Length: 259
Image 1 (cartoon, rainbow, N blue to C red):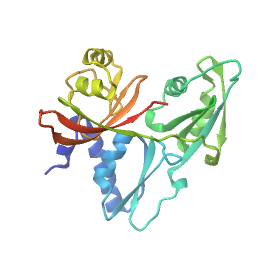
Image 2 (cartoon, helix red, strand yellow):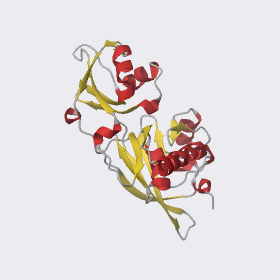
Image 3 (tube, helix red, strand yellow):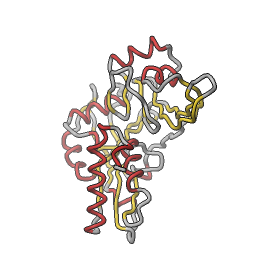
């Protein structure tokens, strides 16, 4: 059976990439360090490589609980250390008494530099402080070009990871039933909305599945899929557990608020 049958069509290109990475480590005994992966990509990589006896796999994003992480594939006789992931931690310095910035402002400014989302990891916020993790190979570029966020002029401090802001990584598990796995039905149930209110979120591009916008209400969810509605947090379809006597599907999903 082809490995591709376990994944969505739009994930096949990434699956092929993973298989190429795995093959290169197996045949050349060379390490492969990836860019930052979102949790769905981490799940795919783990499902393909995670139990291999020849190729070992580790993830690190700067601290336990980080969402976006780099992956390291390496021969079984080696070990992975945090420094092998080549990460940099930046803290923003800005006049917080006079101007307010938010998580989206930081994300938008990094995107505005022309950086791919895979080149930097989590953006952390706490008591008006902002930090973000980046790949070491783009650190100088960021330092030279990131000078403003929103209306605030900023500077960057390269700080040790021991000074990283704490991360909350709590997912609340919820068990319920649904009539189908259509996106509009699932969003309505997961976010406690009426179906008539869930549909406009989808049609207006405010819903993402596995970090990609989906505007089709009939799009079917599968176990392992991540869902986010802008401003309302994230969910993950964990398990499906058969049908009830009334023909509804029993499911479990994880619930988490956005930063």
